Length: 169
Image 1 (cartoon, rainbow, N blue to C red):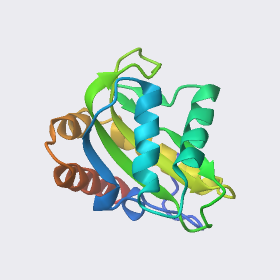
Image 2: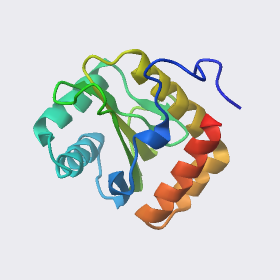
Image 3: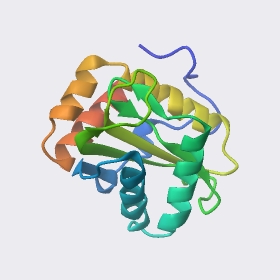
């Protein structure tokens, strides 16, 4: 069922399945702290090209200083605006951690799954729509469980894209 906060058609409306690719998924990322996980995530994202890992890290850690992006149930959605992204370059990255880490989540539970959302600086409504879609998908117990049990990046990508396409239907 579609969230009432996500319009079905909107100018510039984007689906989660539009912003994630198999190359943007990591299984069993090691990292014992929130800071280290965000550093490693920034390095992984920068390896894709066109963005600097320090810029990414500073954007993500700056957003965390405003309040944790840990939404509960072992999930965090770190996100930030990036000056280096053009208007149509919103990107999503799905990351499964090798162990639960303290992320200052609202429920106090350790985080095992991250969905990192990077949006252009000029983006407003698209950014909010994507966050609402993510919150909707990650509120599903089976979806979270399937992602936690996945054994590699391909399996994570398949699980995520199936759920994202169903949520958009």
